[in-house]
Amino acid sequence: MKKFILAICLALGLHQAALAGFLEGATAYNNKNYGTALKEITPLAKAGNADAQHLLGLMYYMGRGVPQDYPQAFQWHRKAALQGKADAQYVVGAMYYTGNAVIQDHKQAVSWFRKAAQQGHGEALQTMGLMYRYHIGGVPQDNVIAYMLWNLAAARSAPNAAEQRAAVVKHMTPEQIEEGQALSARWKPNSPLPTKSRTGGDGN
Image (cartoon, rainbow, N blue to C red; front, side, top):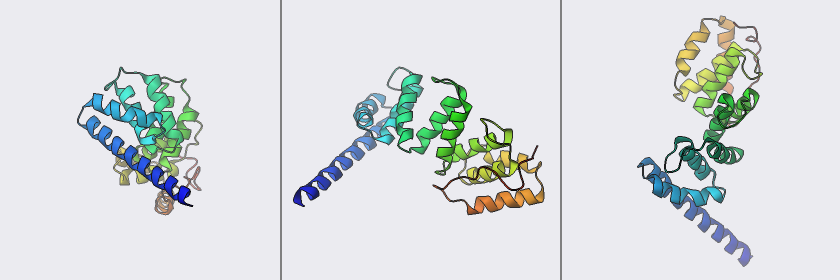
């Protein structure tokens, strides 16, 4: 029992040390002290810290403190994405969508965007709305789901979501708008997003 308690204490101590290192690295990054950020973040990323992996991925993507390297950026973001980091899932989706450092694959992009969106990630919700509005990546065209997603994204201040919602409303019936509002009200973060609506599958 004592060994078990000691192991827990050691684990907590390591977690606190890792958190402190990440905060120092993130602060250095925000202050544009990229050398210090890299020194603090890299060991944590290699040890499996998802926040550090995401930040290191951003540094490689932007070429901050390291030479710009999109394949490295993708690999670090993917590691964080596989651990459930929504920001990283969104970046992985974007890289698959554009074919940046990977073979372009819209279905893979949609899969990663959906994972992030289901956590309530604003930009991912907004992007998934575009997928449903314009039938991209194997997603069915569905104005009601697009409206729902943009409603949720706008509530999270995602850029352009409110404008896109206003534009799609012009192509919706009152019944479709009512369904979209109801779906928005019922959905909670970290639960599956609907894949189709009752009334919106034939929108233009």
